Image 1 (cartoon, one colour):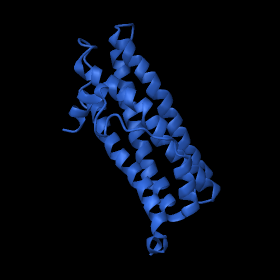
Image 2 (tube, one colour):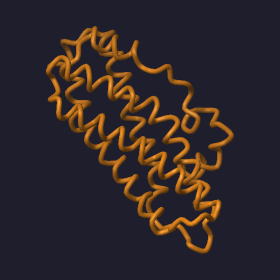
Image 3 (cartoon, helix red, strand yellow):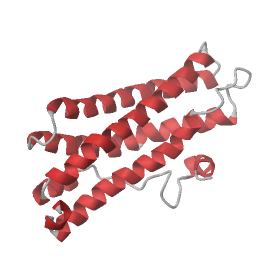
Image 4 (cartoon, one colour):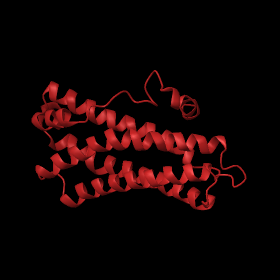
Length: 193
């Protein structure tokens, strides 16, 4: 059993990092449910759903894009350096993250323009929302199938220590940790139902 051969402290660091990333994926999936369902209403661009989506995108572009994806990129780089992950797979993960960052900011701007009733197509914004949600879901599945299993099987104590040390100093998650940041209180109450 490969897991039995891993020293206890190393397994604890690895388990903590991978388990936290997997838990983040579960939380992000709950958040992405907002992107599903009824499209935005052309009659009410400032609806409560639009406000929730604005908060969701603000969160996505300020917390997972900065902390979660950066940590996954470090794992991919470490795996690629040790030849445990093909460069094209590591590059794909990093490209997916870069696309999500770019599209998240573009979508946030589009939603804000919609709320200001600027000349935005509500159908176009709705399509962008759905595509962004599917891209993020694809990214999470891709990591679950490629990055995480290879990291568990291939990285040693020195790798995990370097990853943990180089990880960004993550503050408290403003949406999913207690206390929930005031800005996200309504969003939190909707997604934890």
